Image (cartoon, rainbow, N blue to C red):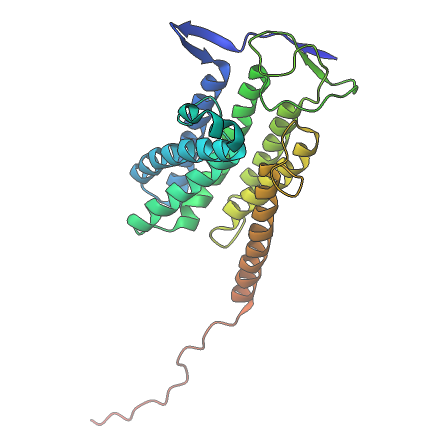
Length: 274
């Protein structure tokens, strides 16, 4: 068994706790922006758009993360409506969907390609999620079901959100390793995958597939049909993204193999008079 006794609270300012989770979220945002700026320069998109859309995505992500968490725990918040507004609970899929909606709105307002912005954001997004999982590991949130496996983790610090003294699946680390593997794949495909939007859809497919599988050994309440809210969203995301990606790839292949239109050749020469 692996014991995790790290204090998840970095320091306190009065009643305000600054946790390692929050620190890692900030580092994740920085990483996303840095990689997005690099990709924007590579494809010729203005850095100003990256900073602007980054701000929109942060706001949309926070709102979406909180909204999805409240919906998932609706019975609790129905009894405690005063706690609906806050940051004590955030849902990762809410953050992803909220950020995507913000990017979609920004691209529509600025008349930019949503697919291009999505491709630019994809590598940094999955790496940022991996960094965030380091915060989850220290924080003790998103913990797994009890297990006797030799790599189980046991949380011992009283400020941890995990079950104390109980060996559980290290689902945060499962997520971390999956996200790093997905980042490696996305990074290799970013200059090869065509057409526009394929990289972004690949990111959604990889993330949803990994998250869906890991949640079978992660603590969570049934939301609908006996599965967790995030699993339901993951299934819907896969049902939408996989066919869309296949269609995009096939269209690109057909267009690449299609013969180019014949130019006007062998035109009869006009007689010239002296």
